[in-house]
Amino acid sequence: MNGTTPHRRSFHAALGALALASLIAACSASTGGSASPAAPGAAGSTPAAPAASVAAAVASLAADSASAPAGQSGGAGGMGGPGAASGPAATYSNIAYASASPSEVLDLWTPTTGTAPFPLVVFVHGGAFKGGDKAMEAGNVASVLANGYAAASLDYRLSGEAPFPAAVQDVKAAVRFLRANAAKYGLDPDRFAAWGESAGGNLVAMIGTTGDQATNLDDPALGNAGVSSAVQGVVDWYGPTDFLQMDAQFAAAPPAACNGQVQSHDPADSPESAYLGAAIQTVPDRAKAANPIAYVATAKKLPAFSIAAGDADCMVPNQQSQVLQGALKAAGATSTFALVPGAGHGDQAITTSQTPVALAMLASVFGK
Picture: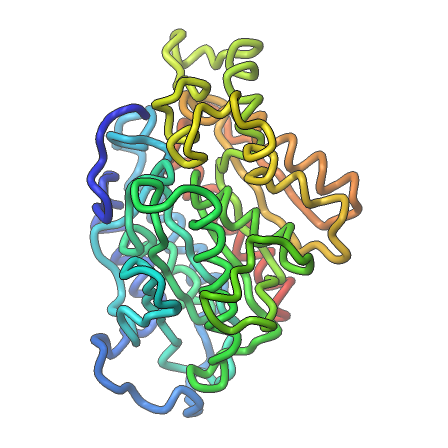
């Protein structure tokens, strides 16, 4: 995961063309572009594609990924996800959700069938907090559109531009913007969820555990102060949580599949250290503030969580997901955790096996 990764570049292997085509076929193609679309509240006579459509698409994903090489798909810079090269065209492109940085933009997709307001899933890309972009979530966007949900995928300030807490503040600002403009875009402000992988998993978990609390993670200067940044559901795949324990967890239980070659997180040049602006062990208070678990006990209401990791992850210890699951369950939250056998970081096996689980959680939360 050490290595130079250009900002705003999708550096992960693309999903197979057959898999993506299957997902897109499960939903209607969007009109695309940034030109004004049809009114978001327009009713359609065709119901949203049922979960069975996505199940068929996921089966295609499984068949397609069987021939893919095993191992970590984080790429140079690591801690990313299995992003796709292309996907359904956005209904609205490059919407500015704040004005502190050109990075603060998002794409928004709304279903072409069904009746607004639509539940919304906000996607947050991975990339070691220092790389990646909103285009990486195309495959996941297709799967939620197939279920009749709107989707947003956003860029945020990466660690090379601004250290913690900028990324969290941006993601929360995006949620506030979308909720404040829900009527404009045909969204249901009471049915929001967030989905992220790796570094994006950390960020969506942070949204989930801090949504109803007053912290410095909601920056009023980014707009829509006073609007809630809470979400009702979180999908967190292999996101880091407690940075200070990562190297110790690898030392105590190194995955056999890694052959002793695991990512180091304590050094000053690690992704997490770059994100915090200093070697993580030298700034324990800052590391705690970036840990979603630190906010669980004081949360008044926690969203539902769907958490997953692979037991052959050589970049982020799977124990990072397990400690988050333990904290959520101890607090009485609704949360599921899956440890996927043989799966590495960003492994297609997680996408294939856990997409139906995530969609089931969303259906429960959204009531559809």
